[in-house]
Image (cartoon, rainbow, N blue to C red; front, side):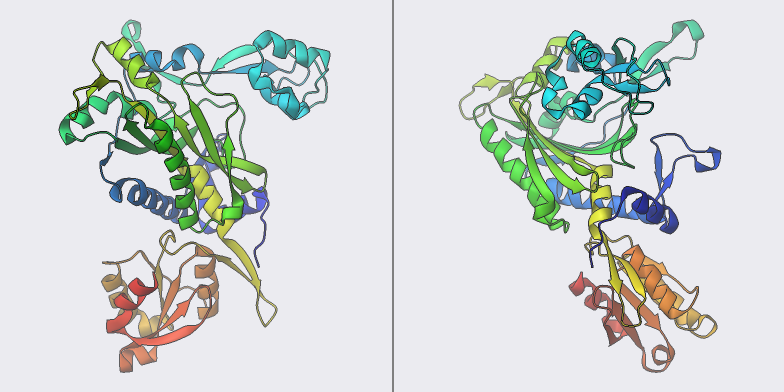
Length: 455
């Protein structure tokens, strides 16, 4: 039975079993920060590997880089982040809480479209409609102030000679400033793509549904550099390509939808999100954007370096257009956790909790369970050491065999291997399937092929 979890229920499950913990928990935590535990780290890494395989390894002329988090501040001047990357904030004079003005308006009236209002218009709308504070219910706010979302830090060791640098608010600029390097070293014709998995930071003031909106997050970025005129075809292709990726991970199509942007960013020709149906509603897990030649043109202007591409077929020169397809690693992990959780009532009336992860995403593929610790541990350890050469393997000898099965079910482990007396006498083991709970007896020499075929 698929159970639709509430957010607080998933938070508790993640903490209890080691998927995700509150950041700095022993000190009372730090708002909007979360640490991935042993299972969550493996799950997220497997998701990142699946993205890398789907978007990089399987595609021709697709290359991965790993750009630094700290960049020359001129990068953020060129991109427009220094001048315009901010939120409109108001403070409640009664209870001293801080809120985004556009969110206050849109939550009060979704048809108001605050994203199209100026600061003055938002100020007037809040006052004229007496929009209440979500916490205290009063309507007594300060004027709107711009709140820059970039984290500043200082570079330099001498107090009076420090320069401001920023923690990157997005990964994409790392791909854009390395466009010339990748073009030169790979000698790749257009279209070619640059991908990157990495951390980004935004000084968000509004916490957002567990790991859905955090101040530190991980992006799986993919930028396709292409010929102007072919950009719309590539844009439409990658909208569908991203959707197929999510379906390949086991997310049902009816939990996904496209959301085309009506109001576009200044750099965009077209933009579309893929949203997943979370318990709190539809939320973005992917963005596909036609960024035209804006980014490379800006970097050419600010750096003085030519970003021109010369078509080898006709010697035509132009600045490439960019189609961007970005997946939020943390948001996708959250969606996978919600999508995979099931409860099943067994014949004896017990309820079994199980994470039905796609096997390629499961933190552990196999669990080794010695039936009796003192008798079967040595043989189980030998088997563990063999299988760890091929799979992520868990070793579990604590508690009854039934409790260990249940524990591996909620971990999402597809197969449990029980080492018993038959293992010592006949060289056979019992393999239990997570989803069907059926058991098979096979020879130890056949385990590797058996699991590979099932996976």
